[in-house]
Amino acid sequence: MDKAEGRNQTPIVELILLGFGNSPELLPLLFLLFLVIYIAAVAGNLLIIVLVRADPHLHTPMYYFVANLSAVEICYISTTLPRLLASLATGVRTISLQNCFVQFDVYGILSTAECLLLTAMCYDRYLAICHPLRYTALMNGRVCGHMVAGCWIYGIFYTIMLQIIILQLVYCGPKEIDHFFCDFSIVKKPFCGKIQTLQWLAYFLALIVTVGVFLFTLAAYVCIITNILRIPSNIGRKKSFSTCSSHLIVVTFYYGSIMTFFVVPMLNPPTILLKIMSV
Image (cartoon, rainbow, N blue to C red):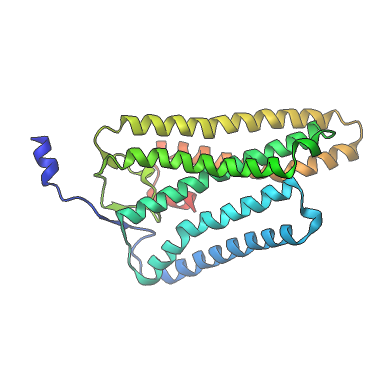
């Protein structure tokens, strides 16, 4: 009986992203707000890439990772905001299921690459402060290139593994997704069939990336701070800490937002709060 009902169901080929409500008077304001955010983010990150490329003094491993992180950020925001801007401008909220999967996959690749790039930057700071005499030999251009390539390869591998299993399932979630981009994680049961393999694989790979790199980052900064405190002069301590303080702030906000994003949904907050957190 269940199989017969499954065959009689009309397959979902188009989804509706509800975005930020139906108030016509708010649409121009939201369009302007997100357009400014998009232009500022793209222009700022492009400026960083150009400066790192143009200034020979910035041809160091740290700024090499910064430039790559900026490139990821440009791709990251370009995956979600242009689609939202088009929806706000035209009022068309529909998106094909196939395009939704593409957006979801690209988003997954970039978010994983971003996380691993921040970890690579942490390793760079660890070597610079804890092993300064060996830093030049350990962090040469070849090693940096391999680390960046590894970040992208793992992100692509992670997404492909999930997509192979997803393609064997049937999307049976709601036609309307109360979000501004394709994020299937906010839907309780988006797929029908034997989803245990998908769940276990997603949890396993996410555990390796999120928990693994978090513990690595935490251990690295414990070593970094310990070595900084051993420096006898105040000027030396301040100079050493200044080389990693900005990265520490970014990492703190990054993991803080991730933890908040996983904890807050357990409290069943309003959907608009989850959208604001995503922004």
